[in-house]
Length: 96
Image (tube, rainbow, N blue to C red; front, side, top):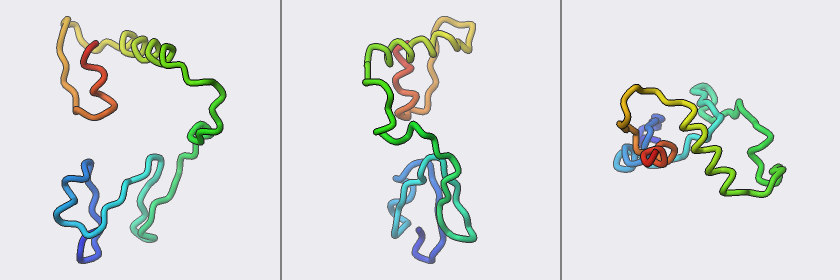
């Protein structure tokens, strides 16, 4: 939130820290309404609650699924090359 009451948005918090008096996370599955000046959740998956998990966490299965999804979707005809945002979701892809 700006000092003048304006609402600012940025993909990284460091862009806002020096100029805003209040910083809030934009929650996933939400949109911002300028009329109500609030977030509204539009996506409510049943799996988001920890207690709704049906299986015990198995890191080996997770790793194999992750590697399989990368191998399934090659998007180049050259043997090597990585251009990533550096975010948490894309950083693990570099080794493959």
